[in-house]
Length: 434
Image (cartoon, rainbow, N blue to C red; front, side, top):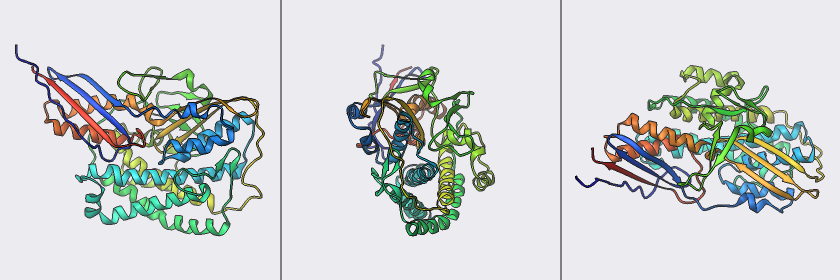
């Protein structure tokens, strides 16, 4: 009997994905015998670090979880804590929080489209090669990203780990003159954002249809961002307080990141899921461009996520402009908050998908327990299922380098925020003899 033939593909750097992970694949007799997406980021302990802290400290602390989407962590947190304290921050705060969130969507989506994903579609090794081949498109993307950063700074005082949000509203309200300047820039950016949708839709799309259950928030009349009910393409309509009755997290041996399942099955969160479930909530201008480019919706091709991100950039530019055009500086940019004990829930749509928080406070407002379920842990089981499908569709007999690229590209479609550390994928592909 011949000795089993094995070989490993070592990718020292998986560029254009945030975080640290590895993929193990074993092929035996023309089938995938084992597949595991291993995430081995060190425990960050944010939930435990929050215990015993004052509720007023939470927004600034959770912003440090992610340098790309700190606003999402802050908005889910303040929503949960305001529910405990029994306060309504008012219409001005709710509107300006959407502006704040629009900045994050624009910044994060433009970063992903141009620096992380587009090179895969156009045969470029990275953004440097993409910029040489498509300089105008990359410059446009960087202009839009800068606009998103400036919207975050408008209320957050800085674009990375902003410090302007607080339970009850914001620490500071910008002046009408500063807002007017940003409105002029937003108005000028609208045609550029529409052009971004057309450009992403023109990219050569890989084939592939997955059997996804899409999950996202849904609002009675707005495109979901800061609040709503949890809905799915399988017919769920869930209050955010009932998350645990339908969703369950569990540890898998090969990963430090938890897997989250819906009724025991994997599911998809993120821009494509949002678009599939909320197309009718988009403004007519955005729906018109999507119809013009012929994007089939609802879509089950994860590669269409790049177009969904561009559509959300276009939406966010227009939404921020709409909300800021009638801006008036309030007497106070926050509602007064008195601490009390209780349990509260918050859920918002981070750029990468639904982000759920639960907090319990004591009588003085100190955090007793905290629980945070980020989008990447919700997508991880779905990524593994899609990797299996992608490898089978590519053909297991293909050269290892080809299979490695297909896996990397698939992971980048999801844009997982694995961690804020180094970027690494160690693909270990083992083939047993027939």
